[in-house]
Image (tube, rainbow, N blue to C red; front, side, top):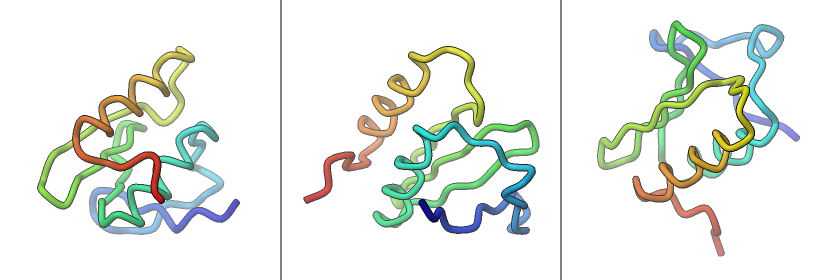
Length: 86
């Protein structure tokens, strides 16, 4: 699966070798970018999803709890991301 280059808060590309995102989050990153969202990496190994309307959703890149991926999906859905594109 090809994921577009991630960028940190300063807009610099982040090496994929350094970036270890849970595989389940790759789908949400791809969907968010296709729908006009901005996805950046914070300086503390978290992802920041910003919707076109300005809403923010933060999540860990390597969450240890399996429920965290589902909770992130729920937060993104509440912020307006369509997780079931047609």
